[in-house]
Length: 394
Image (tube, rainbow, N blue to C red; front, side):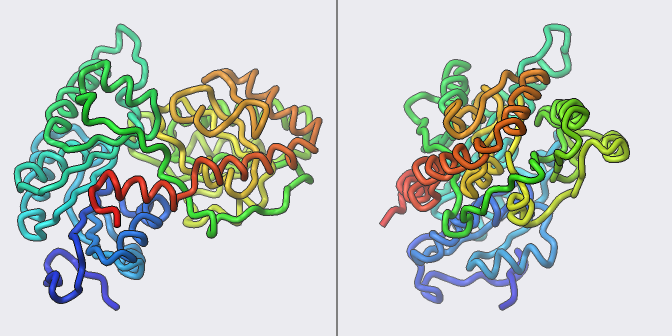
């Protein structure tokens, strides 16, 4: 079955017998199925036509989306740039796409898709517009009073968000911190906001793996941004390996174009020192999580609810993460892992050493992680909530 491009003819309702036409707007193609696959499959199983818009499809990713039962559609997006002409091009392209596809529901996520996708859907008179705030990201992190460029960017994004979210019927949030902050800043109208929780994982696909006790292995999977706590992870790894040379530290993730991105040279320096093993971007983290004793995400990025942590918990891995928005939703301190203050390397070292010195915690806290994943992060339950918000629940 060939995937469709925007230039290809689209099926009509009478041809495919669907109930609704739904358009998801993604900032990049490679995470569509890992982040939104369960939702796409649920929509397709209920007979909806699902268009998945992304700016960077490869032939392989296009075919994978098609295999899930959706239709891949290209649109232009400069994800991290600040050129207004390119953003206008994104807005107008989305408007033209919506005029052609005539979706009845639009669901954008991530900053630029939410801003320009919501505005384009409003201009195209899409009947149901649902914004999904999956974290506030780099722009909404705390800034120094002297960082005028960052503060100006924050004001600009807030203004764009405020304008776009006024056009939406519902604004969904993954954690209460983000919801309260966007209301307090008068960016999101309070009466339109809904707390839906994490995007969740398919617990049938993410099964518990036997605990890894020897060697004790700590893993971090993230885009290579400083704000994800990668520097702190490397510094803690250096100290722990000095005391416990048999420990392993795995870093999964590709280079990024965000302002806070690490360079390849910085990461390779840690590899050459023997501090950690860098595997780059991997399409399936499960084999690496199977080798993992403890999942670590020392992020101070404005996360929604980190996907990687949910996946690690589903595989019965204890977690060390920060007591920060989004991250704190994944750990009950002392039950399935430990919360540490953001940017506190010493606290991170101490948390890691507890697992090295008491490896039985890897087993007991890992089992608790799986239980919490079943309670909080079951994609089937969360997807039902999303369908209700989208107005298409059966």
